[in-house]
Length: 585
Image (tube, rainbow, N blue to C red):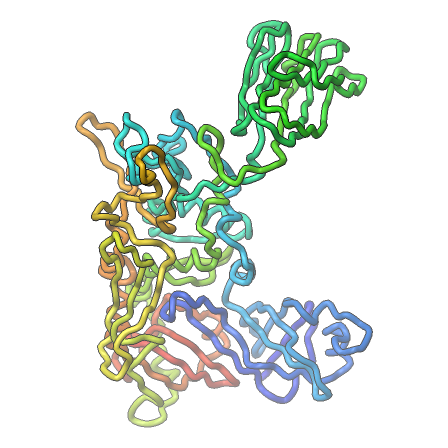
């Protein structure tokens, strides 16, 4: 049998030992462990060609760029290319170079798994936070998005509305799309996308973000000769005020601070705008002309530290502004307030749970019983149902079996790292009913029970209310509202219609109880498979074409056992492959 390994498009010198390949399926193993296929360590002889291809990795004084990173490789068997791989140089010795291969998962998805990034980094935005904007049902142009969705916030914070939310919630599907876009890959959730789109993470804190700690306004003309502003972001200690200054604009800086003031203005003639800083008694504290570029463009950029409590920033234009240009003023409070304030902007990312991207994806998989497989442009997520439904497409391996006796080479009655009772749990909440669930494996030789999955979210159902996210409470004297840490949450959007046909969107936890999930979606079929598993190991004579065309969503049929099997793993060396297979119901 002829084996070839290519690095940087050039074949390496292989030793005498045959390469052992491990083909791994992610479809039926632990959902929380997404793994790639891999090779046993490959010993490359110490030839001049291999030394050059590996960029002289053990030459003192030379830093090989292949020493601490993955590099591209291709593996051929009998002239057939089985796969593209990522190779890594493990070690060097007098005997040669130890190299290992991984394949079967998108390179970009592997990067995602290896990165230590939080989901907080993928929602770098802010939403208007005031009484007129905090009720949009999380719908933007008919599409589900981040937004303010009704739920019980713990108290009646607005006498006109029944226990209305005032914190936004983050749509899980949009967050997944933002993650996929960052890594340049596709995540195909198939028919489950419609269910994931209904999942939201309610935000329970009020952390500020320096990026949104400023006042920004476009300078427009309300009517000829008189400037006005269109406010975009408003900082807490700055309020807009239009005063009786002819052709002028005034902004109230309500409180002391360290401000950076930036402005760009284009006028219709060369009359230079004047920047004035005055106190509440109209005394001029500071004044300066804008910098002029010679083409009616004026700019200003200065930091100013003040201890005054009430200041007014006034720009006297002295000339009509040119509205064809994006005239603006931006004032940043350099000293950040730790808490975002109502009537400003609510930062999304800094208030999300601090959960890694990988853990977040795994949590979504557990909720629906989904498994990751490689696709042409990224990764697809499918359920066990897919394999079962593909029985009509099964590949017949009957004649490829190499019998070792009257039975399989090895038969076992356990699969994966399970106990008899395998629990799915949420964070404990003394005010909530249990939302845990479990899957059963009928094998008395296993440990009695174990926690299979534990979500970082507090279960809903506070005091029996499945729509409650009680992050507010009254102070002991009942005079002020206080923020309370009620734990990170995940909830589902439920849309109903009133008697007039008006849409009402609310967040609800009811359908996210784990026992509901186990009895529905892909977890139901998954439990059926692991409840009474029958796993065999047998030797097959698989050709390079067989290995090249492995599709873990397609079961194999073996006439000797009169049964269909899902592929768990294949260990291939030379002409023979040892396969681990799980019998389908």
